[in-house]
Length: 123
Image (cartoon, rainbow, N blue to C red; front, side, top):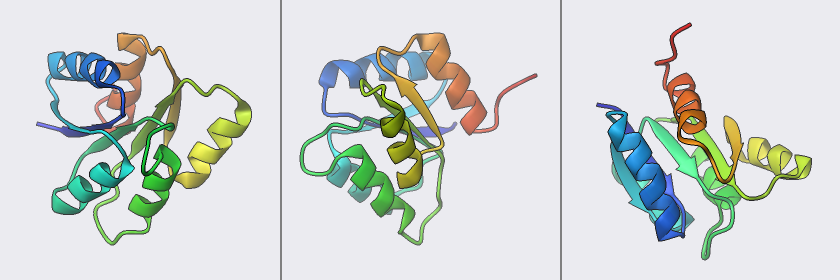
């Protein structure tokens, strides 16, 4: 079973994403900020990260930059944020994101990206 870490400071968003992903058969873990996410990532490997940008302590950009600098398995990351400017997308990709979705994300939109990122997409 593929393991996904949701990184978002909003409990409602984590619950929403968790419900979508668990219903699709994924094992879901949560972190409330980039520091907690980094700690969890160093303890166990994940197959995918779903990351918010705006969080206290360590934002999504900082988390991805730090994650990408670690000598661990580098799973793909989907940045999910309310930030919709081109510069936000560019910053996310520069930090190490593999995809970018703008909130609110529709369930099928999230699942398409998740399946693409973890190699489960069928053509």
